[in-house]
Length: 174
Image 1 (spheres, rainbow, N blue to C red):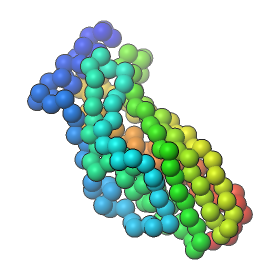
Image 2 (image 1 turned 90 degrees about the horizontal axis):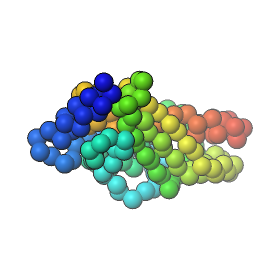
Image 3 (image 1 turned 45 degrees about the vertical axis):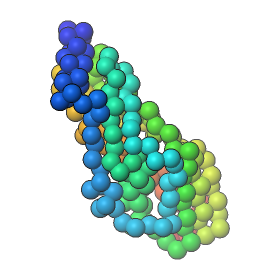
Image 4 (image 1 turned 60 degrees about the vertical axis):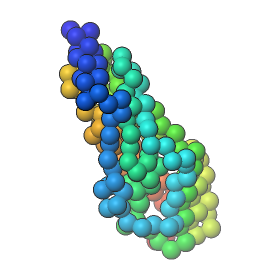
């Protein structure tokens, strides 16, 4: 049964109109986020994500780019909490996304990591952050064009929660 579902997923991915690239448009999510010059995510402008774990190579093209999506989600989560003299900068952002259609409960997972530096009214916190998120995978009909942005969004929200916890830990009052 598992081999059949893997084969079905492979056929569906390869039958996407002959395209070798699955499109994931996140431009609305990015455009809807507030402007926050105090928060930056530096990374090369990667737009293509390779989803591992499937028999056929799955390439997902994220528009505008992955770093912009992560930055937009961080801004959306952290902007309401902003106070003067707060600066957050993240760099060396890396991610891996893998599908596991053969698990008892098929899932698609993301591992996101970033080196971030927080300056809260002169107090500095600098460390590496790691996030892992999973969503159920319908092996018979995978929808990676929606799953990949959803995973990036969820991992970014969790990263924002960790960043804010470290801002609060500095003891700086809003």
